Image (cartoon, rainbow, N blue to C red; front, side, top):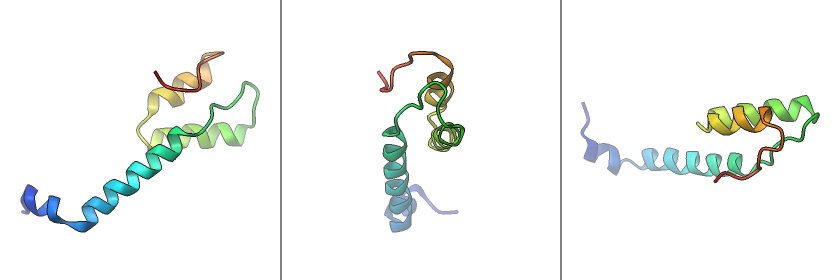
Length: 72
């Protein structure tokens, strides 16, 4: 079993962390789909937010009319 210091010294670990951070930032920049908008974009919006771990925005932004685009 590897230790935590081995994990932190691993270059691939940091590449995965950086890739997830970039993906999460890109997903966070997606604008909220308008009411009655494209079903494909709504699917992509929800799916991307669920993958990035931002389930709250994926669920609330599409069900609450007039929900703000940005997060507090």
